[in-house]
Structure formats: structure tokens, C-alpha cells
Length: 205
Ligand SMILES: [Zn+2]
Image (cartoon, rainbow, N blue to C red; front, side, top):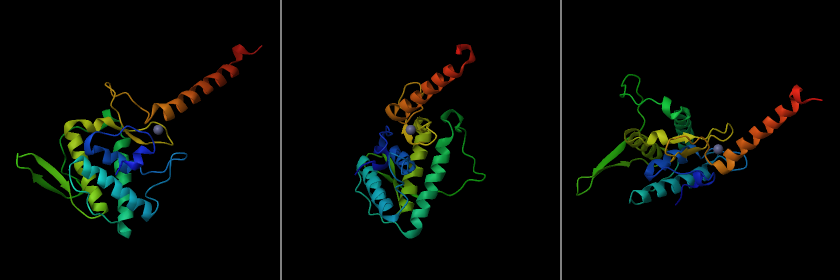
């Protein structure tokens, strides 16, 4: 059990089950880091079982029995695109206003349960891609209510765009990992500055 997609990138994961949202986005392929985990059925199935197992463990639940049908793979890729587009919006531009029923799309079903102390939880339902959609949309709902949603971002690296959790106090992190994407950007910027300085006519003899 692990957040295997996200761990490949060394990105910070969101606390609790919210990390499953990042995990879906981070199944993407990035050169040098890893291949697209949703490119084929076998890797997608392996990833889904690991992610669902990790999610269930974090919630004190038994790991669900999941299997992917042929159409589930397309459904997973579509859901990944939808969630990535939502996260591509900078946190301060994401709507925090009231829900608008006009144009609302049905996304997933969930089961609500309560324990003997009256605490309530959402439990995903479904057998494959529908289970994941149920978990992902539930976590997005909870995160939009407790404010954690604004901490989930995509890396600024144009070829990276890995989803990470910004735990900085002022919410200013832009790289999924400062040691990799952050350093690379610094290196490029300093090379560009050196090039500019070399081409500056005032510095020519
Ligand atoms: Zn990055």
C-alpha cells in the first residue's frame, strides 16, 4: 500500500485521504521520473489497488476489492483530466462562492455512515473507476469545506505539472520539489542571466 504515483516524484502528500486526488493526477508520465501509469490496463490496475488500499488504511477501513473493466481505464483518464484542469487554476482564483446548481454535472455516488459516537464519514462505492471517482470527489468536497483544497497545487514546471501539497505558512510554494524542479529552474534562470550579460553590448570591447 502506498501513494506510489506521487512517491515517484518526491512530492509532499496532502494529509488524510486528500492525497488520493494528487495520486490520480500524478499517474501522469514525466520524462526521467516515470511512465504514465494509466497507459495500460495492468499498471492501472496495480496502481488503483495500491491507492485504494492506502486510502482505506488511512481511514481505518478494509481495502476494497477493485477490478478495472476495459471502459474503466478511459474513465480514469477522463477523471484525471478533469481534476488536473481544476488544479491548474491558481488557488486564489478558484471559486469559494456558493454552489450553483445550474449546469451541475453528476460526478459520483457515496455512502454515508455514522459510528456509535455519531461521527459521520463518506465511504466510496463502486468496483473500479467508479470507486475512485467516489473517493476523489468526496475528498474534494471535504477539502473545499475545510480549506485544504487551496493547498493542493500543480508544479510550475511546464513539463512537470506534478500535484503537490503546499504546507508552507504563506502558501507560496510553486515547485513540487525544490531540490528537483526548483533547482532546475534556478539553473536555467542563472544560465539565461549569464547569456544576457555576455550579449550585453555595453560589455563588448
Ligand atoms: Zn515539478
